[in-house]
Length: 395
Image (tube, rainbow, N blue to C red; front, side, top):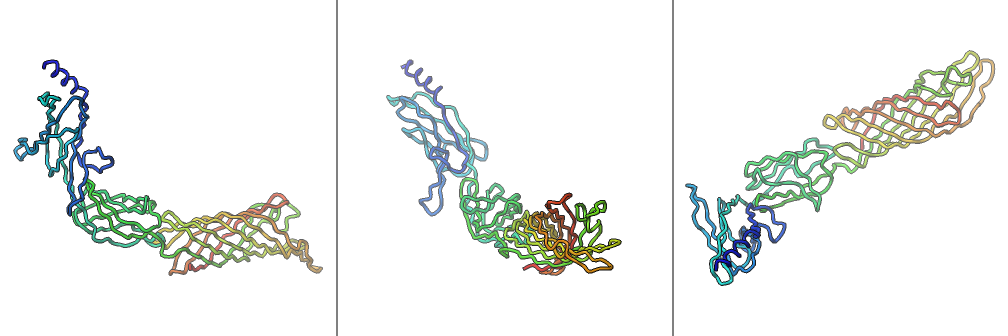
């Protein structure tokens, strides 16, 4: 008999007892608990699990609960022939041990006490929320107030659409309501549910919360004044006898910009801009006066970012197109004018920085400057600025 007791003591040393008790979300059938939903109210069933020992006929599990005086008292005594025991315990502090009986049903040994705690698990409920939507092209406050029951500081709450989750950056709860604050950068369009999960895995959801835009796209149209300021190039250099228009500012010009903005997010909007600018070039030399018309037409990628409650915006554009020089004439004091270069079409690129100020929606003022670089066969290739001041309307 002594050798048999020695065997069971040795077996206990290799018995890796696994005691897991805190009620977390179930991800595997061998975890510490599961929720029995067969009745009207869900019931938590805690599972105490240990590694199975060989040559054991049965286990006797004793569960004790600590009372208000700190004394542990027996509340459960479970006999089982498998390596787990199931109990359904209320919130409280507990401990348990296991008695092992051998194949002859004789007592072999008892494990030491292991303590654990059952934490509170309450069913949350969602009854409403406000607002019902975020509009990325109009709003600048991203906060939701949710109404219901059993909101806890430890609750997990977020927006969910399929596998997409948007978590708040700040969450506060007072039992019957919760306040969620989101980062605007994390938002993306869609139709979401509001999901909450309390400690223990009890959860609830409601919907639908919409993230979108009031308008599917913006169409910005502006027209205004645009002079031309030469920077470099064969057309403008004073040192070249062939330069028809020595560096100067050309004040006679007009421009049109049309921007189509279909992609709108909190961090900015993306779209395309079509621009056209027209300038009358002229200069009086001692013996002649050249004049011509310069037309720039470009298609650009545009990024736009709004400030100050959508009243002020900054625009960055980069594009390619053509610059056309036509109607080129030399005028002489003593003779008729004649065409020197009828039409010269050259590829060019444009980079633009501009600002929009809405004076009264949908009307705005657009001002900024374009830098145009012409890619010509003649060198040095011309480059110039086009400051502009325009009035616009947003559709």
